[in-house]
Image 1: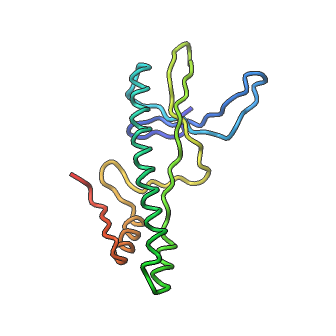
Image 2: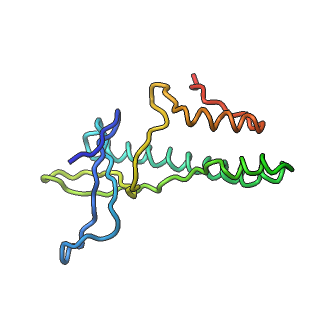
Image 3: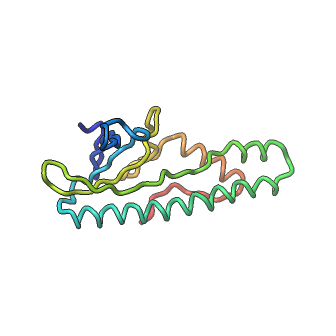
Length: 153
């Protein structure tokens, strides 16, 4: 049963089972299926593209985090240093693709670790940006970082 649906994906909570005794193995996971990719190879291409973009985004996140960690030394005043230390760091969950047979049909789904807590969407595909993000961008621009949240054309 789906617990979330977006413009591109249907999301379900899943668990791995021990084939010997049927006990759960590991943590609760989130399975994401494409709303549009139907055949096995089309599904796999969809997931590979998602994983590729996730990896690229994670590398930018690491570079951003490294830059924040490095930036503090360029400021002498405690207020700026505290501001930089208070900025959030970016972490990405590592996804995996799992192959399965459901109702006699072979398919693959993208799985990630389930994050416990309230989910908050900070932006949308239609250009919405949460006020909290706008506030962080303003703080970073006040430090001279030069960040924008305008959509790219």
